[in-house]
Image (cartoon, rainbow, N blue to C red; front, side, top):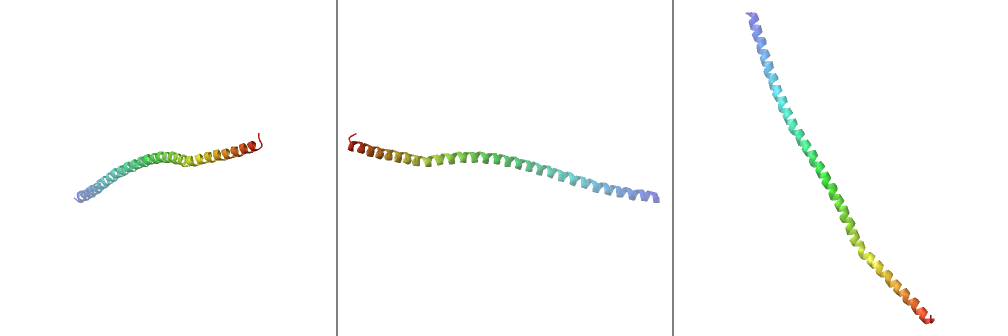
Length: 106
């Protein structure tokens, strides 16, 4: 009889241990599922960052082009003014040379 009680007691301990193990397994699998979801979120975030980086690089390239175009537009009046000033100086120099040549009768 004593052996039966001891075996029943051990069996109860084994069942309690198995119940605790089952609960630990459920917890572990739940945490693994949560980790999978988190990993998917991180992967999605990494893809989004990659896409944003590519878009930013394209915007930077476009901005560089716009800056270059703007600088050309800003420089255009200056080049026109320089060309006009050159023509004025050449006209004045030509008039002076013409006047000198006319004065000396050449």
